Image (tube, rainbow, N blue to C red; front, side, top):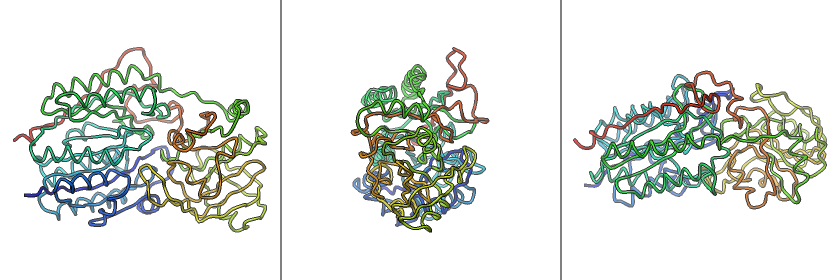
Length: 509
């Protein structure tokens, strides 16, 4: 008989240092929400669910679509929002009757009001529906926070292997292949998890090139070619969630050999800890970045306000880069962006070609700075719609909401109504802004800027600016995360790693 495999998704990265709360409107405005058969619309998209659907269907198994929701990184998810997504996914699972496996696509670093670990909560709830004998496999973003309850309630956890994230489809495919083998009794997954007490910014965590995380990930990839190893994941953790149970981790899954899984997970974790200092980021002031950038020949020089990364849950409303450019008396063509719905409306009201004086910035999340009074000319208006050219939202339509381009002396400022995820430079180009023609290009992203500017930029600088996605973890008000952790604590002694193992008896009885 054909296997029946349920497929569901609830995926978002949270930031507990953001001031607002994510609701269902946020989900639908910045991402997607499909239920039942509508989940099948993701077949041709660039995400895990597409990989899961294709692999299950190609195997001859039957897909049981549940619910699929993914949205831009945001603040803590409201109780009502998470409750709706959870209950609707579980209701469809219950209505489906017996299934032979469940595939779940999650982020791993989501936090909801009243639930520090929604992914573990979802795994437990699914287990209660399908029982202990049915394999349940979850995929995570590379920045997923793996916890002991997740390990104890899942058959397998598989994370992305690439950063920037260009492998969501293949991650879904890998998860589906493993689940199908487990459902047929061809393998008996045993999972070992080691948590390392590190909370790191992801700026130096690219898996491309020869950086520290690339080398660590290459070791994990090589491990998967060893006999008996089904999967090996290096989790960098979404670093902006202040919860007790968090940290970087390693997950190794063997075919029935607990000692092998644990031994290899420990080796990866030891290498992770040994290289921890290589992830520390050098930052400079805007003035210093401009001074150094002027000495670099050619365009563009990218100025990185990573502390206001909307892809990490920040509001995108910081105006501090623009303030720094003006104070540095920049005369070179420069471009930047800010989220300010009130400012966008004021400029739209004045009309294209009008000169306006308007307060901009720090009005969505007011804890990180003050608005700046700016005078400029409105040179373009837009409905804010654009198409993502790749990444986890590849092929879908994004919306900045009503937006304008404001010319302030030599600075062109894109004023958006809504925050959006940055994959490349789609937002700039959608309103006619050409980064290659600017000397200084502002980017609010700590990794994906390489997708947009990697082949053209002549230099880059990480800016020392405040915000909820700061490049230095020590600058954020962590209060609940378990201590000690690097880089906040450093006593010269190697710590005891947290360890957990899955229970394979469910599949072997």
